Length: 342
Ligand code: GLN
Image (cartoon, rainbow, N blue to C red; front, side):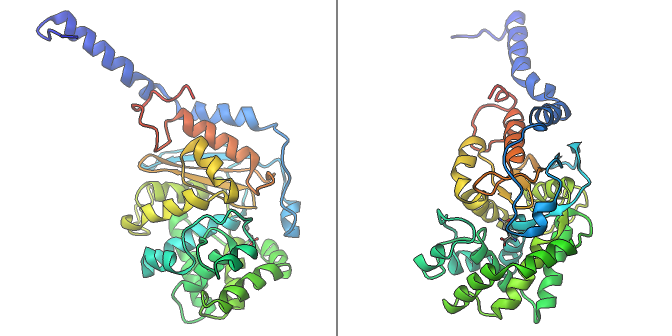
């Protein structure tokens, strides 16, 4: 079609067309997208709290909150965004990021690897299959190994470095939920066994029981939905906290962090999650999930009941709806603002 742009009416037509393409992006009201997802799923009674760590079974299953933080630091929230749950496996992302920051991404890929295991997160078979390699830092053996790789002379030094990193990602001082830590420390014999095996295969080079204890502490850190969304937004913003302005990790390692999250963030349901959302994400058995839309936003939801794969039911559904409504999928080539119909 030939367009005679000298014509005033043609120009008017082009302007109107552009207006149509651009308008939906501007019209999306993030607050109402969050409210819609919250209302849709708040009464959904699927899944159950994790109970293999006894204290997790006692957390209120009705707790439900969602927060989205844009890369320019705007915070949108709905529901309970102040109650804390234990961060659990979501911590694995930020400990791995710390190791990559200190020792380079290859330190992770060369040691425990960056491949999906296809096994549950505390699988012993997954270790045995490749002698502690060709797995990843999002499953327990790889995560405890990553904790052991954080620089520090003593377990206490390593712990201080880890919690300091989490504080910077969240933009506030976080602390351990002592009841959760105690409960998990009393019942973490399986994790101790995983760490011992990783030590036996030369993947862990420090005291494996100290590494397991620091790992247990990192999993017991208390976070609310806002903290998790801020941590995700820091990754979405190239490693710089969008509210405090602190560059927490180098922007050069963010792609590798996100790649591991995409591969294994929701355990053996990571493929299904990626298929539906395209978002690098991480779940924890405390009921939190965070997800990253690179260059756009970080989002998190907390709701303790989990599906059989160990991922929060309400958090998965609400984050997927919200991200798809806001064009969050980094694999989606449609122009900004025209993907909301999914
Ligand atoms: N602390 C938990 C564990 O080691 C973390 C597991 C999880 O959140 N998937 O079993």
